[in-house]
Amino acid sequence: MFISRAPNPNQRTPSVSPLSLAASSVDSSVDPVVLHPSCENGLKRLIDIAGALVGLGTTALLLPWIVFAIRKDGKGPIFYSQMRCGLNGKPFRMWKFRSMIPEADRLQHLVANQAKGNIFKNNCDPRITKIGRFLRRPASMNSLSFGMC
Image 1 (tube, rainbow, N blue to C red):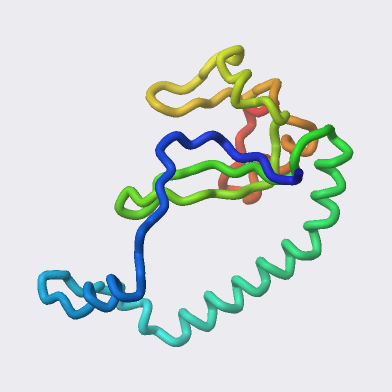
Image 2: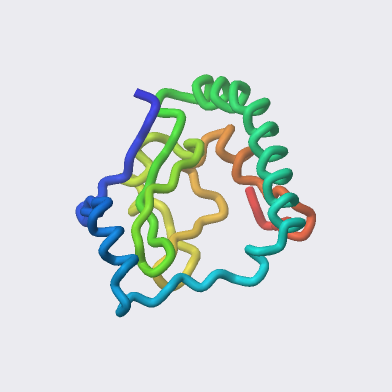
């Protein structure tokens, strides 16, 4: 199997039917959706679409090489998924290339946490794979971190 999923005890499936959508759009107590003024700008929309196409094209060219490198780096799935909290608290499933060993979630308690609060951060995390170090490196000059391993 190519996919690894983090366990989610709070997963729920929405119960939305076309009838409930139609009823909610007629209901006067429901506030209409207010869009940002930039959504109506045609030039911005064109730039967004062009940028998405460039990003998808680049990803399509790199995808076979990344998959090969992850497979060569060790056993386990290529992709990792995790439930995250989105707009208005709505949960969504996030997908990314696997950059850690497959059992990383179970081994987190063995690694020291360098951050405070509800986040986990360790600059020299031993669970990160070789290709994971490459995938996690900063992508732009203004986000360089010189304290990385």
